[in-house]
Image 1 (tube, rainbow, N blue to C red):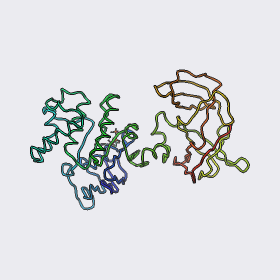
Image 2: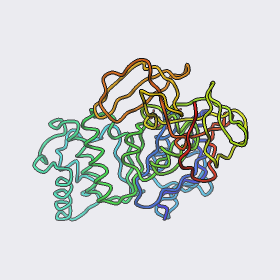
Image 3: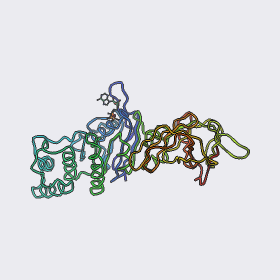
Length: 375
Ligand SMILES: Nc1ncnc2c1ncn2[C@@H]1O[C@H](COP(=O)(O)OP(=O)(O)OP(=O)(O)O)[C@@H](O)[C@H]1O
């Protein structure tokens, strides 16, 4: 069941059309991330759901109740939408101690004192801040302040949570810890969560559904697996994945009765079900699907090693292949490789094809196994 529905939402700021027409259904209890580059309309979408921003036209339905409709003139203000928020700044009250920051909304909602106390204790325990209730926000680290904001959400027990780049002010280590914390919180609260970020790692690690946006338009909506492995278009393919996916120009043609792809002076075999006639095409291969070998095989392409960057458990290798820059990612620590006498190989079934005109992915008619390519 859908807990949040946006229908034909448009939003203009003066003459700037931030959202041309957005339709989105967010299932109850899911963790959905709006992901995209700066200015693509993520925050605007979140603020329209919250009611902090009124859409220009369209409809917003939360939990089956219309909270905004340009047709009927309905507009329910944010405080009556039953939502919890965490934004970039944690918006803690600096003049209130941790306990008051967490329970303020509950006291304002006139909850009984015993309920407030129980929820405070539970929330503090869940974010591991028991014992710090008596401190002011300024007496806490950034990560602890963030946890107070999370505790406030836990205590409020809203069925919808909205988060806008909540981890962006934290250092890398804390960010990783808080990702785990937020994911755990979602599992426990089962609240429908809409999370805004431009960080693909946050999106892939935490979400049930990732919504990739560009210029106010949804490019693809799917599980992290789908977004990563079956990108709908070149924009998604390039935006997701670090190091970035490798892109090349090829030409689909025939060699006798076999369909092949020509890449420079090499011929690469093509997955059997590729739904595309002969002609130019863009093809892509993820860095981790490239293998580096030190002996020429029947299906290898000659390469020259440029830069070797070990990151710990993996090594990023920049290569030159037939005049093209190629990035490979190998699953081990490597400080150097021979510059020459190196070849790359990749399985043809790991190639993704895109239309050169539209940038849309070319579908495969059937799963392909054991494909290969020849140099
Ligand atoms: N109050 C405003 N007045 C005018 N233009 C605005 C306003 N708020 C946002 N915009 C514009 O609308 C577009 C979408 O902005 P939005 O903040 O939703 O993007 P975003 O994807 O959240 O970006 P970021 O990751 O940088 O926060 C941008 O072009 C932005 O400049």
